[in-house]
Image (cartoon, rainbow, N blue to C red):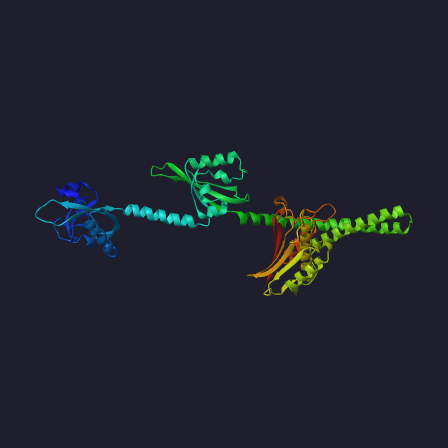
Length: 479
């Protein structure tokens, strides 16, 4: 509906925004004081209104203007407007006017031009922040004063495992591990509530129950009156740092154990040799069946202890073998053939997927094969100890070249390993097998051998699903 044009246009001089009365041919009929001050034209000068609109938008502006005339409806349009040779952002409102004058039949359009430069600048800043936050690799969350989440970015969703809908409106304690004390969180709240930034290390839990460690920085969000209106939190993933710390501690532990093992092997080995000799003398000196039976039992236990000592010595002393170029794939194949001979392996399928791109590596052939056999035998035992063994049990071995490393992966369908035992699996004398079924030194020795080749051995396992050992060996180890 048109606005009735029966009043003096000077009524709009009190407006802070620019107002124009424009004829249907686009020429300016009248303007208010705000428009006159900003674009420096006289109220009576016949200028085209569209000359003040940025060139790329003029066609659309004219289209909206004409639609207002034809349909007698309000039209709004955002563009940039020339003001003192500078372009500013404006929102134009085209409002139809009815003309009560009998002297002319031309239509008039009232144009209200609102300066939205500040709004556009804030909108751009918000857009930039949104793009940075949304695409950041660090998990980001924003909470209100009560600690309820009102924003989370994609990295936060991916890291936590929760969907956006599951997080918005919830308190961050939804994924808390519960390991931090109430005093820890009270200190954080006291700090950020006072307008200060708080930084600390926290452990949270993903939706699947797995832990993730982050360094959390929480910064208060202040409004125009410098009052806290919310909180901005950004997480830095510490998983890699924690892994490196554990590896360093493990390496130091293994070095200490190696030194201890050398001493034990020496101190125990000599007395054991004497005991073994005495047992043999005693066996030759008696015909008593009972005594011979007991002496045989003692001898078998001495043999077991001797094997443990040999493993300790092999781990603790530097190898005297010479490194030779070794075919990893051949080592895998031979290890598989050795393992398949065992009775337990009869009903297990061995699947090898070996890359033909694997280069010859400087290794000690017997030692790397010992590593492969140890892992395969453990895989066979893990499958054999399952409560429900199926006909689909298998061990898959793959080899591939990845940049500067050769990776050999062993995956079984065994019973898996409890999470609390994963960190202990390479420690000496630790075993998940029943008593008397293993010494707990096989994987420990394997770890030492791989490390001596400047490689790495990693473990992944899911209980009742299976276990994967990953061995990485450098193609060009440092001398």
